[in-house]
Length: 263
Length: 309
Image 1 (cartoon, chains in turn cyan, red):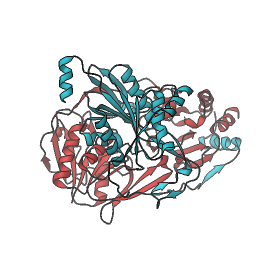
Image 2 (tube, chains in turn orange, cyan):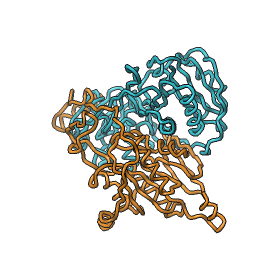
Image 3 (cartoon, chains in turn yellow, red):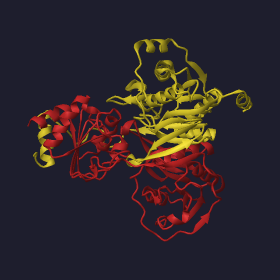
Image 4 (cartoon, helix red, strand yellow):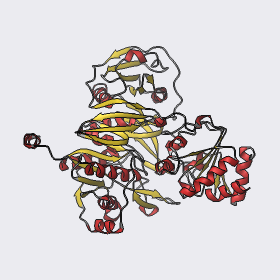
């Protein structure tokens, strides 16, 4: 607070830092094995990719920086393992983020993940936290809100437009049925970003190579270990019951008959 | 013992999902059901809040007309502290997700989101939610005091009841997010809500160039062409053709889905469809689990066969 007051006296304050939260999500292949007493999916049965919503969040952060609203952009992820979890922040670096942090912690608990990210937001002096609306794997849609709760910051969920308006942000958020709510809010705040808000930038091979060689700061978990109450199972009906197979022509015929005859 | 339900409302109307949450709270059987209403004019929504199973209406005035997330967070935090309810139920909706996780994190309360099963457990609250696009189900028993967001459509809505006794809570301070207004979708586009037959396409159609093929298929079947969200995000198809929670809710006689995996947000929009046919190369795609006719095959190859038949 003191330094902010000082800056106000001596000219415009520098643009605030932004934390963008990213996650490398697992995509299930055809088969699945559960491990750790049914707490987790065996990573051998998962393909990993940057969470789709997070790419939009990174793009939104970079656009705010380029527009002069945001300063330093820090990308952070919570996950164990250099190769898998870290790929998310390396992708964010390749897109143009200034700094990357990975918290060494393997947890599916969104409250615990949020606690780690809130710590990083504080340490980075961020005035804006951006994250994807949800992760494609567990889809809790909880981390952004939980960060806001821990920091006691306002939270805007499901942003589909995000524009700087002086020192404030004008945000449009997506409601059900294509209705959009328009809001105005001053930092600090947390925003979760809906898919389609922008077009995540193209990343060149050179940028990927440079990001692979860049430093990712790894920090130890600051939260306490807790036993997860969740147990996974393959739901009934997901075992291939009542599937119809056949040549494309046979399936086509079936559809035409079911629709009630083509016109 | 008690269960607190957050009433969702917007533009002067109570959201229908609130009645579903009241049903869920009654199912838990953990004492009185208290409906929390945070708004500028609680009196205007009193009649709508007269739902069967509500034992008490908690009214907190807030300066902004519509549900203000900051005001709701403050009111729920106070209730968790002072009344120690067994559970706090919200909808897994744009408003519920803007409030529930923040409340749980600030209070140190257990959290479960997008819950599709909810029942009284031996000690706490037994919940289930989906993961990996519906391919896995996760179950847990949460201790008392949990914050839960419930997927819309999971519970039958509670019917009308007597106007519950009202308890006024301290007024909420002005929130930090200013509500400026709403943009409704432009009128005059495609109206999917009245379509009798719908051909819907998803990521599984592979390439943008294939959209034209499915236009032919739709024409051949006398159907209206629709799509899942990713195709709209990618700009392959106009937004007014999107089916799902953030698009149109449809109730056609027949719904034919090509290459749509079946994210919960999409399924939410087709719950009232008559005959549901789904074509997908992935036999584990969640939509095939809910489809009446689950066809395993390549969407484009099947479409070509229909178009050229």
